[in-house]
Amino acid sequence: MRQRAKAILGMLMLLQFLQCMNLFNRRPFMDEGIYLTSAWMYMQGAIPYVEFILVKPLGIVWAFAALFSLVEPTIFNARAFMALVSLAQLAMIFLIAKRAFKSEQAGLAAAFLFVLWNIPFSNYLTANEPFMALFQSIAILSLYIFLYEKKSSIALVGFSLSLGISMLFKQTAAIFAVLFAAAFIWLHLREKKALPSAKEFGILAAGLALPGLIMLVHIWQLNAIPEFVEIMLFPIGLAESASFLVIDSRILIALGAFAFVPVALIALWKKSRIAKGSEKALMLLLLWFLAGFINMFPFRGCCFHLITALPAASVIGGFAIAASLEKRENKLLLLFTAAVLALSIIASVSMQSVLASDTYCFDQIEDVAQYVKQNTGPEERILVMPTVPELYFLSKRQPSARQLQFFDEFTPEFQQQILEQVKENRPVMVIYFSQQRQLLYTGPELVDDYIKENYTEREAIALEPALYKFFNYAIILEPN
Image 1: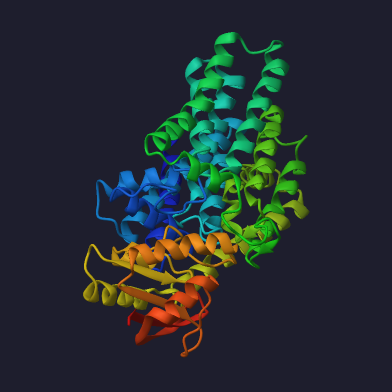
Image 2 (image 1 turned 120 degrees about the horizontal axis):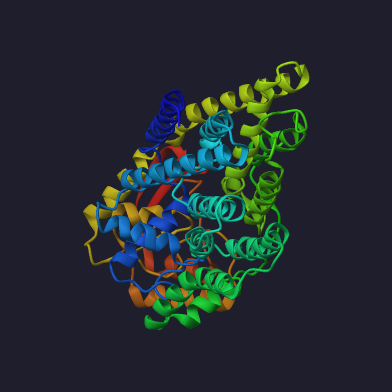
């Protein structure tokens, strides 16, 4: 690798780290609150799925429990860890693009796109998707090396084990893993003119299964298998299906960025020096890109669900940029490339300015957490309603029910389960986050009725700006 390329990659990694640094002191997203609270509770000895509901496998809990065993459990340390995950992903994107297209320019362009799209895609969040994207990227690089560079057992182990680890973070990764296990067999047959050997099949199966088996054995040791199965296979007491279409408008950022990919597929493909000998790699990259959309299921949420497609989009987009710069006579392609880069810069800068504004600070939620700490004991339990689970993590207080947020409608049977847990744990404080000054009950009906009968308002803390843009008050209640 030439010194100039090393210097540029180093600057890109520094830029990536600095823009993540700008986000360290911003408020947690509600999903972050669930993952951080779950990891902190796990560190305290709480049994997953039994004492706190996590609708994902244990990967993210293990990752942050390991982190919190080394450093203090704070949002700063969690985001710093995510910055390191993001830097590792950046390095993988550079390596994949460089090797696939035999071009440092393509690698640097891919890394540059990833840096630009990092903030608009919310890739700095403490969430499952950045981990999934990283391990899936390692799997793709390992598969490429095995098929097209060196047929080594180490590369095959890296491929299968990375796919296996990715399944520890989210259920949709299992679809991705099965798809690429099948792709491995098909590409092996196509490239090597033979099926994988028994040894290779064994390595593939062992790598895919081992991480999940370790997790299941651990859950079995905790006597939590029934709760795990209930949560993984059924809709967790929801009165309606969770698979309907609810997409944030910011998904347009992702779709706009991905519009660059089909252009990359046709950009000077036959004429570009960078394209020669890369046709097979591009087929693999295109499959990687399309498979990344699996993570959108059940089609709810913002563009951070598409982080799994972002690395492939960056790699293919990096090819288009490098190819267009090489063949400057294609004016249309140059204009399109310039427009994509300009819009990406505008989106990144705009999103950074929004996230750096007072609207996204969480100073007051820390004030509420401090209030809870001062008025409750470390061993006492609280109840946060309806959906600000990060307060448990920030206040370091245990919840009164295994449900950490109450955002959806629950079946009467599930409401009864929650109510029994709340009664048994007797929260010394209830914190309702509300739009109105008058207490607005928005949790499960049975739990709301119990709180109305047994708790009295103690204080209302005005939140300015509104938390998540719609919670204007944190209303504190204490037992009658």
